[in-house]
Length: 99
Image (tube, rainbow, N blue to C red; front, top):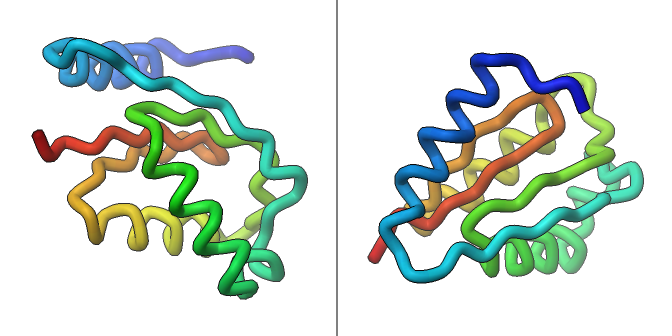
């Protein structure tokens, strides 16, 4: 993965925010072509959001979404619980800022 300096600095800033806690839960998930069709399935969408909420930082791969609709929908659902989401294309970093 080729990470730009700007992306690296954003990641460092996020990790600095979460470094104040005792633990940091990091995950990586390959969605295997998760797109608008799978997002429209209520059970799949609910499961995805529940799993993402378990982590402070999660890296997501293989979102198939030309218009960024899937990312936007996931961000909206996660933000309802005051979770910060930073999007780098098909990569999400998630941190619950509520302590």
